[in-house]
Image (cartoon, rainbow, N blue to C red; front, side, top):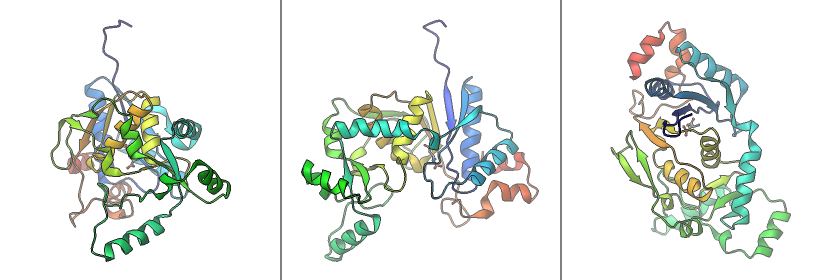
Length: 295
Ligand code: GLU
């Protein structure tokens, strides 16, 4: 290939098979498909099924059925995250060796209680862009020996990024190119703000990776050049950019699109069957009707 020729763009649609696809997913899938076509790019399908407790083969089959019914095509086979756990483990191992992550033993319930007790005194606890309280991070101060003892005790734990330490390793500003828009219309060159997320989870106690780590590694592994997804993931991009920098991975261009809201003005959820693509199909709607509803 001529060296000066631009690389063929690679797009991906990356649903989690923990429910049925709804109109919001239809918009994402249709946009990815259309943008790949216009730019002469490839379209990949990635099944994000690391959450073993909630993802099922039946939901995955439903996703494929819905996408085919919409008239979309993509490169086969689809990638399943559950088949690439070693990739996530290896990357986590590197970050452990560099002292950038630590085992975190507090459960979600325990964090909630600690924060509620703190806020009962009239003080407010910092929250991440999704509204969840930042991790208290007490374990950051544990000695290596104490950490080892706790791990040897077999207590369930997540691995969290030591955000302050990770940020201290950055020696150049962290930005990304946004060709869509964030929730407040942010577009163009965006300055990443990973600190807003605190010590994010990179490996969960109940799953072998976190969304952030798996999505970043897979986008790199699959040589994705364009990430097109809903703007509910706009702020998460800050974490993905940080992981790309720490793990020396290439950065895609990001394009966040609007969300489709339900009649109650809220983001659609997978548990709301009325706006599921399958429900529209069963009610006699056509793929063109779906296109007209979302595009
Ligand atoms: N799996 C994620 C979801 O279903 C999307 C991940 C992404 O597009 O980055 O919300």
